[in-house]
Structure formats: C-alpha cells, structure tokens
Image 1 (cartoon, rainbow, N blue to C red):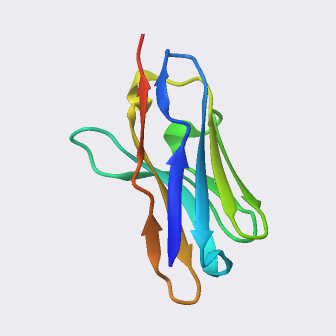
Image 2 (cartoon, rainbow, N blue to C red; image 1 turned 90 degrees about the vertical axis):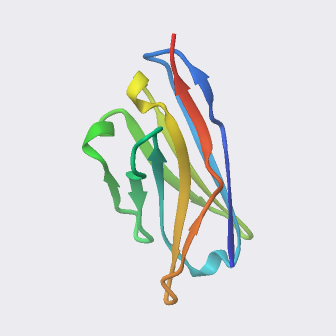
Length: 119
C-alpha cells in the first residue's frame, strides 16, 4: 500500500507561481512512476506531468516550459513536487498526485488539492 498526501495548493493571481508537493509513504520501495494529474470542473482528469523511475519526465503540451516536476527520495518517504510558473486561469483545477507500483502495477491516488488562478 502507498499513501499519497498533496499540499501547497491555493489561490494565486494570473502569472503567479505555486509549488505542489506530494508526500508518499508506505511501500515506497515499490513505486515506479509518479505524476500529477488535474481535473477541472466539468472536464475529465488529464495528465499534467510524469516522472519515471529512471528520471525521465513527460509534460502535457499545455504546461511545457511553465511547469517542472521533480522527485526526491528519502529513506522512508518520497516527495514529488510540481513547480508551477506563469499560471493561467485555465490551470484552475484539482490536482492529484499519482503513483504506479512495480511489479504489481497498482495505481494510487492522493485526495487532490485545489489550485485556483484568478485575479
């Protein structure tokens, strides 16, 4: 079992920045891929950025050049971060942390955290 807890969301003005964090605990040794997804009202959940165990990253086109994903491993926890710059109103959504384990290929989700970009 893997537990994921997001933090760092909130209200920010257009053009501003926020950093999201996701603390992973539990069977962190089994985590392979991690990523951030988001879901805006009335829309489907979509991938924002992902990072695989080897360190390669993948970004959705709509955040390339603005968002940076990073993963920091410690003895008993993993911290996944999303640095968000040049935020736009259309970035408003609930952001979810995701982890996929290996070799069981289980998917784990955090509860989500709200990011609101508005003046």
